[in-house]
Every structure is written in structure tokens, then in C-alpha cells.
Length: 195
Image 1 (cartoon, one colour):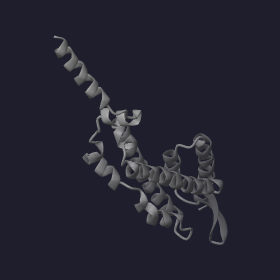
Image 2: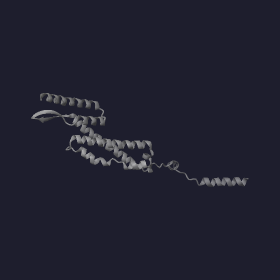
Image 3: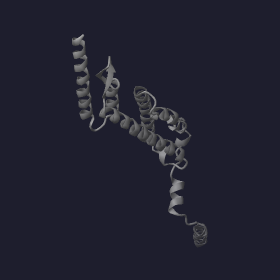
Image 4: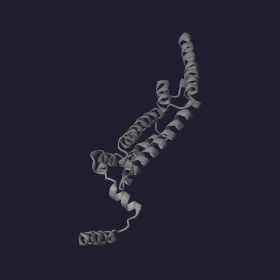
């Protein structure tokens, strides 16, 4: 029996002598299961869904020579597009965090960050145009040689743009718009009575 115990101890010492010390990072990598998230169809869709394609439309919206109503329409469409894409990124990443935190996810994160930046750019320009128009919503038009107050652009279009942006001072902007609308209506009423 002593020979048998000696053989067991010798074998145990032989195997323990071959054990290699591994770092905690290596152990973590070995023990952590690798998710297949980056090979999923969602990951493929997210990589394809970039916001780089809005630059041509954004330059059309920034064109000062274009009619303001057309520019507001372009900004509204762009704002909806980038907001929708950003929401899709956030939804997909919240459902599957592995899409953001695994090795190789840089493309998805870059695309999401690009959409967030595009949304901020469109919002800034859109808000700037809306605020510029709100500062002077009524202009003087000359009819029959007399100045007449007229809306700079459709009040409904401007109202929906303010609603879409959901600005902090939305109520005050809508109040200013309503006041401007009343000055145009009063002038229109007077003009109809004069005829």
C-alpha cells in the first residue's frame, strides 16, 4: 500500500508542477461566454443604418435662397429621420447590450454616435430658423401702394415646427405666434370691411 500511495503522490506532484499561472484577464476571457450578438441580423442592420446620407438634404435646408416654408419642411423631415434612427439604435442597444460592449462593436457605436450628432445638428439649425421667423412672423406687404400686414409664412406650419421641436419655451413661442396671428387677422378684417 505504501508503494501505491507513493505513486499517487508522485503523480499528483507531477501534474501540479505543470500548472501554469494565468492572469485574471485571461481567466475572465476563458470563462466568459462570447455572445453571437455581432453576427446577428440586428447588428447588420445597425451597421447599415447610418446618418451620413442626410448631408445633402441638410445643405438644401440650410440654403438661405430657398423659400422658408420649404426649408421648414425639409428640416421637419430630417428631424424625424434622425430622431427615428437614433431611437432604433438606443432600442437595439438597450435590448442587447452585447452589441455595444463586445470587441468589434466600434462600427455600431460610431454609427450611433454619428446619428446622435446629426440629430443635434439638425435640431440646432431647425431651432435657429424657427426662432428667426418667430422674431419677425409678420411682414409688411404692399397692395395697391398701401402697406398691409401679412404672415411671413403659414402660422400652422410654424406652429407644428414649434410642437415638433418641443422646446423649453414652447408656450411663450406659441403665445408670440398667436399674438402675431391676431395682428394679421385684425388687418384682414379691417380690409374686408373697407371694401
